[in-house]
Amino acid sequence: MTAAAPRSGPVAFVGAGNMGGAMAARLCELGWPVVVCDIDPVRQQAAETAGARLADTPLAAARALPDAGVLIVCVVDAAQCGAVLLGEGGAPGALDAMRPGQTVMLCPTIAPEDTESLAAALQARGIGCIDAPMSGGPQRARNGSMSLMVAAPEAVLARHAALLEALSSQVFRISERVGDGARTKLVNNLLAGINLVGAAEALALAGHLGLDLRTTLGVIEHSSGQSWIGSDRMRRSLDGDVAPRAHMTLLEKDTRLAVQAATAAGFAGPLGAGAARAFAQATQDGLADCDDGALLGWLQGQQRPKPDR
Image (cartoon, rainbow, N blue to C red):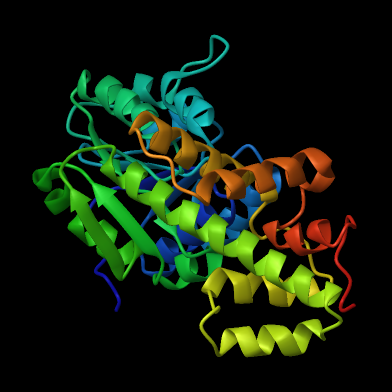
């Protein structure tokens, strides 16, 4: 579905990586004016090619916003969110240029308490916050079918309904409590991590049992063991393709944060901590810059997967 373009100034993005860049390109295609800031010149060039205007700093991106404009933050973690909004090393952050009535949309997977802390800093300045983690990967971000988990006061969501609709056909309104989007995303990503570790372990076992890995995966994909992330990552891994679409470090971070949230809530499940340990150990063993599908090769006792046994 094509959303109507806004009547006033641009949406600003800080962070134009796999997800942020795809979201920015989608808005450009739909006719929304977009400003993009990213520290990577290659990402900046891709955003400009897609039709965005460029900003050198988060401060400059924020200055481009209209009175009721939205700054979308698509960086990696809470530390980067803080640097973008509050500044770092004496450099001003985006909040130094933002005005009451504007809104920040936080899209990274971060701890709920970090989301709440940033939202409190925004609220103190009269700036709204949409807690809006996303899921589904760059292709779905580009075509608007990704999952967007939003938590914010209803008035804030209503004010920016057209933008949310343009970004995703799968907008899940979690609650009015900022932080619940982050909590939902951690629950989702913990399950994704468990499913991925399980898929890699099952295929590694299949190899040890002398089974053909592609045939085994084909059976799993049409049987009770199927998971989307298992199919997606294991297919690439069997082709020897560990070029990072989703770095190992992302699920290392996300599963770690999920287990920390579980501990804080007084809950200890049987699988989450094990999945978190697997991602942490694979990262420590040199796979940080690989796709998380490289877990298969790691479990097979090698750094890089081969097409088959």
